[in-house]
Length: 72
Length: 240
Image 1 (cartoon, rainbow over the protein chains, first blue to last red):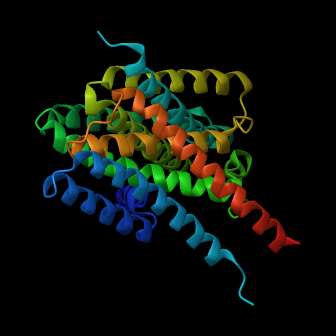
Image 2: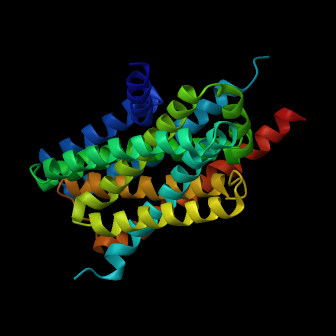
């Protein structure tokens, strides 16, 4: 049983290892979906996915760096 | 007939990503074999490969039932979550904020945990199953969006053959495989595939078609290297 639990936990952490990164990325994709399907600008939506993903990566890296910095 | 520009990104992404996963699984199987013999090591690994085969056989036909755009969108989002997670860790490792992945250390840690044959076989089973599931996901993710399952599977199979051949030849953990560099490259490639499939799933085909993957990978590489260049001096300064 513990093997199954460990496997499921590992699978979960594959995609949701960093909750902040996951939520921000889903927000980016949600915004892009609105732009693609409501505003009907699919190319703009693609640009939002790319710039959003890059921004989420940078945010996640700087957040990790901030957390690892020892407090004064 | 598939052309090289279409198949090459899927084959290379599946090969490099699978190399990393197979090296990690091999380290633990070897640790088990060195302590308790090859029987529990290969027994556990074989059982895990059997479970993986069942997963692939069960999932394969289901994927064909999902509409293409929905499949591309779902795979794209999962790839972005997976790829950005890898790239984040790779940037943190390259800038010195996170310890580098060390197969020798993992090998010794696994050896210290294994005491009995049952535990040994289970350790081998878990390692192959978990790393194998990641390989299955990567092959599905880079291959299913545009009928590239066979090229992606060939990439993964080639990684398995190369790592096994190297491992059986040197009979030690493959610590000299530049795993941290490979993980950086995998993070870049999976993130590029993630952006590509997510956009295609939203009905926004990229200019240049599949060649856009190279431009997207280049963009992620530049951003990731820039982040490392920004963080490295800060880490060095904090350490001094």
